[in-house]
Length: 84
Image (tube, rainbow, N blue to C red; front, top):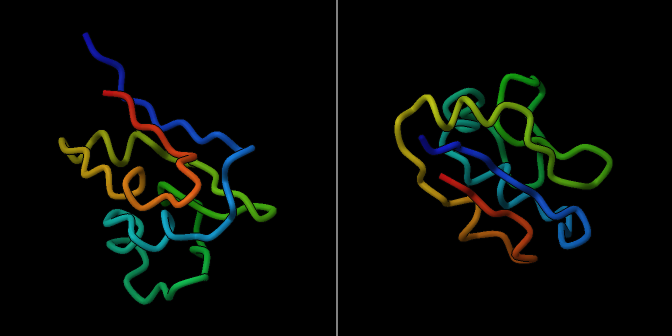
């Protein structure tokens, strides 16, 4: 049985918000989200908190039965790793 997990290495996170803004789940919940903005709700996968990416609800991604890995691919600091 595999375990889905999104890990963020906070030492590598630059706080660029690309992961927040590219995440299809985040955009589904807050479609008007603009680059550099953080979602107003905690019912998303990613949010910037104190200048760092935080994973709030990884189950939302897992429950969609796909892992698009866009956050991992776009992360400029290579701070995000997805385990499936």
